[in-house]
Image 1 (spheres, rainbow, N blue to C red):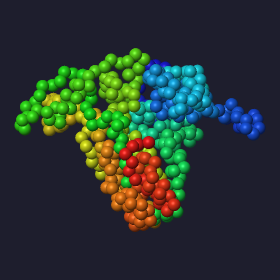
Image 2 (cartoon, helix red, strand yellow; image 1 turned 120 degrees about the vertical axis):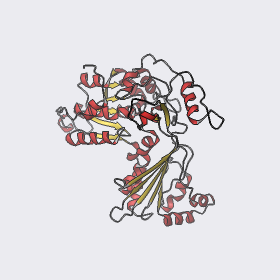
Image 3 (tube, helix red, strand yellow; image 1 turned 90 degrees about the vertical axis):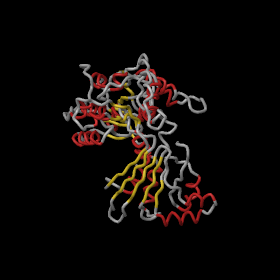
Image 4 (spheres, one colour; image 1 turned 45 degrees about the vertical axis):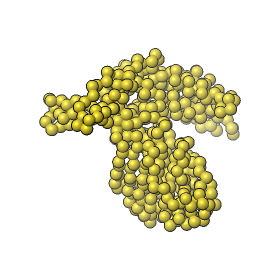
Length: 441
C-alpha cells in the first residue's frame, strides 16, 4: 500500500484488470442435504457502513462471514450497528446481535484501498458510500477480482456507469449487482404482470413523484464558508437583500467547524477535484444534496420509482429529455481579468454547488413493437402532477367510475408511497393506481 491519494481519473479511467482465480468446492462433495460447505460461505466486506451498508450487512451476516469493513467514521458505523440490536418494541433482534458480533471481530480500515491490498480473504464487497465514491470503489474491487454489490445509484455519472459495464463484460466470472431493493419486491413483479396481461391497456403516460429532498436533506443552498458576512450591495430597487445577497449571508451564517476526532475527512472527499472544507451539513446523510458528493433527489429515488415503469414497459433509452427546476444552490465566482475575454470566468459567474429544491423532468420514449410511445414525467421537492379527476371520484366512493376513468386514460400512475387506500379499493378491479401521499415511506 503506497498511501497515494486516490483520484477519479486513476481508478475510473485505468482499464487494467487483475484476475484472481477462485476454486469453489461443490456442497455435495462435503456433505448431504442441508449441509453448508465452507466454500459456500461468502467472505464479504463493506465499504461505507453508516447507512445502507449496515442494513445490507445485517442481512448478509445471517449466513455469511463479515471479514472486514472500510469506513472513514468508525464511531458512526458502530452507532448504526448498535441501533440494530433492538426492534421497534425494544426487544432483542437476533440478526442485530449476530451483526454486532461479526462487526466487532471484523478487520477495520479507514482506507478501502488498504483493505483491498491487505485483506486477501474477501470474496465480495458491498459498496454503500456516498455516490461520488461508488464507481471508484467498485472498479478497484473488481480489478482485484472481487464480486461487487453497489448501492443505488450505481454511479455518479453516465461515464462511470459505462466504465463499470465494460469492466463487468470483460470479467464475466464476477457477480455484479446494483442495490435496488424495490426491484426484488413482489410489488415490482405484480406491476409487470398487470402490464403484460394488458389489464389497463396500452400505457402512454407515466407520472412519478417524491417529496424529497423536502424534510430529508437541504438543497438549493450555498456552500458554508464561515467568512464574515459581506456588506450589503447597492440596489436599484431600494432593498439590498437580493436573492444573491441572502445566499451570501446564509453561507456566512452557517459558520465553519473543525473536523471531528476520528473522521478521515480527506478520505471522505476522496476523488473530488477541489478541496472541500469539513462541515456537518455534509456528513452524515446530507451529502445527497451536494454536487460534489451526491446526485440529488432524482438520483436518490429515481432508481426506485422509475424502475417499475421502466422495467414493466421495456422503455429503453429516451428520445428526448426536458427538465426545469427551482434555483440551484450557488456560490459567486469573482471575475478573472486573466481569463479569455467574453468567457464566464472573465465575467464572473455563480457556480452550482447544491441541487435545486424542486425539479420536473419529462422523458419521451419511442414505441416498442406493439406498445405505443410513452411520456414519463418526474416531479420532486413538493411538485406534483395535475391531480386527476380520479381522486375526487374515489372520495365520493364511485370505484367503478374510477376504474372506467383509468381505462379511458390509459395512464400508469406511480408514487413513492406504497400505502394507499385507493389502491386497496381498486385491487378488485385489477387496476394499478397509487395516488399522492404526503409522507414518504
